[in-house]
Image (cartoon, rainbow, N blue to C red):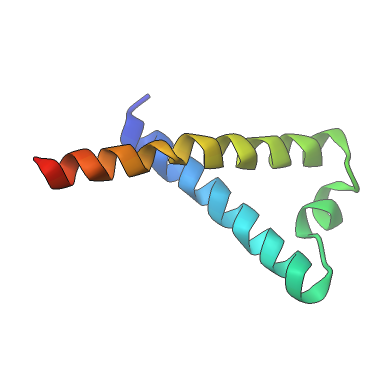
Length: 70
């Protein structure tokens, strides 16, 4: 898989996670739990994918730095 496609997919997941945390913080509303159930296997997969996406996107900092130095 092209790394650019993976970047966009994971960035989308992380944005979904950020919106969900914003909803939790402002309104005490967990969208993922509302859609998939409170800690159901589907919601746990969504939470795990968002977490993995966040960890993977840490590599963006390294790529930005290498582009600036080029």
